[in-house]
Amino acid sequence: MKLKISVLFLIYSTLLIVIILTLFSIKSKVITQNKELNWLNSQISQEKNNIQILKAELAYLTTPERINKLQKKYLNLKNIDKSQYQTLDE
Image (cartoon, rainbow, N blue to C red):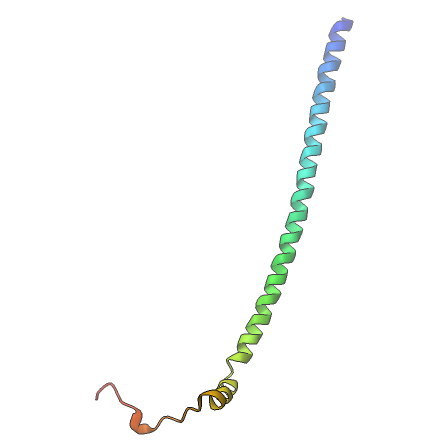
């Protein structure tokens, strides 16, 4: 009878140790995944901020007043004369 109890105790103890080690491993993996998730969320936030900045820069760079000023400074284009227009019917 004592041998049975000892064997059962050994089996249950081994099982308990395996369960504890498994839970510890899972906990470690979850902590690692949470750290990675937080880092990724931070990166996403930074990229969203960068996109907003780039959109603002694009809006400024493509303003008609700025483009007109640059074309006068660098291209020296003249206004189009009506005689240069042609309709599709012609």
